Length: 240
Length: 218
Image (cartoon, rainbow over all chains, first blue to last red):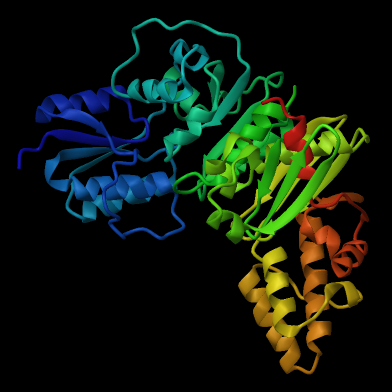
């Protein structure tokens, strides 16, 4: 089978993805998402769902991946670092990289008026293709702090005037290991702090939520009825 | 107008007419079989496909609490058949809330199940000084059996479990000094007296979510 993709996860340096794509005549493929591939069964059930997605996707698509560009530094997490080694031992060609960039790109999408799901996906596209279009700026009615969730239906609960903070904002700025930017929120705007269950970012999310107020939620696989209810109630009754 | 709170085990229906309103409580399994029933407004998972306007349970609870309670700062807890949810307001603005659905099994349904099996009436049962630690329904039932095997009466064992549920509910809600209580356990005197060991309890009955539905703009 022709190897068509350079798989990547996290937010590796743009040059690392480009170089791998050019060298192998492949196109980039973000392995973080839920493609519905069967479980590879190589990780504990208490692993973050995104890490499990990466493992499942990489092993299912193994024959189509020319290589995997793996984020293994402070820009990702220990689980990403360990997974890089595991994938290598499973026969994939893996390039472990760290993204230490501190030169921030201009934020456009995170503050734009557009459906949150579309906005978050567009930001994740900037990992391999910088955004060069235009987007309408809006004043925020609510803020979403966190990462792209495994179950994207969560994002459909939010209004188009939701600003994005946390690691996703760092991704748009091209500085995924910039902890100072990751900790920024606007204390005047009601904020929902989201993490995947079993993710180390829960520590940061809880701290920020207690410091600034807001709603702290986490989810593993598909979002539950109670999680939807909490977000809906917070959007309706939460005040700043 | 018919509005309904369709819980896992019990459905509370309010008929609102010009002159008077009435409350009917029916087992949800009957409502599921009776396809002719359709509600103007509904809450509860089972109501989703049976109403013109749906609100989730936390929204209905928060709305009902704001309507019924005049305090500026308060916590209202709803203990249902299989879950516990609470909303805390400060200066009548939402401060905290949570909904324990996955691990909240040791609530109304489990208590009903055990009271029927052992033929124990919770309204004739005093609170226990001892308690069974509650982490989930399955563990709690196991500990009730253990207590009986160790010589406690079924009544005493269940009273210990109720005390454990009360502590768990109080802790889950952030250990408030005053608990406004909603849901079917308002009619369980053993639970009310057990919960009173941890906080002042003000029972609001099982129609608070319905009141919330009434107050919400559709």
